[in-house]
Length: 78
Image 1 (cartoon, rainbow, N blue to C red):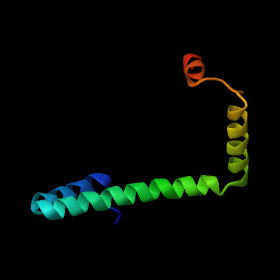
Image 2 (image 1 turned 120 degrees about the vertical axis):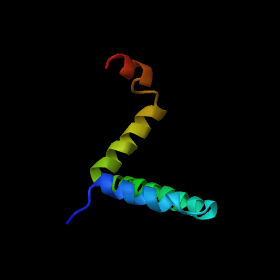
Image 3 (image 1 turned 135 degrees about the horizontal axis):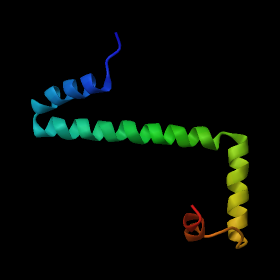
C-alpha cells in the first residue's frame, strides 16, 4: 500500500517533534542535500541532451553578439 504525501508529512512531523535541536539541524541539512541533488540531476539530464546543449550554445553566442531580446521585453509581452 502506497502512502500519501499527507501521511508521510504527518509521520515526519511526529518524528521531528521529538528530536533534539542537533538532530533537527542534521535532518534539515540532509533534506537540503536531497533537494539540491535532485535539481542537479535534472540539470545534468538537460545538459546531456545534445539538442538542448546546442540551443544553449547558440543562445550564448547570440547574447555575446548583442542579439536577442531583454527579459523586460519578453515579460512585457506575456
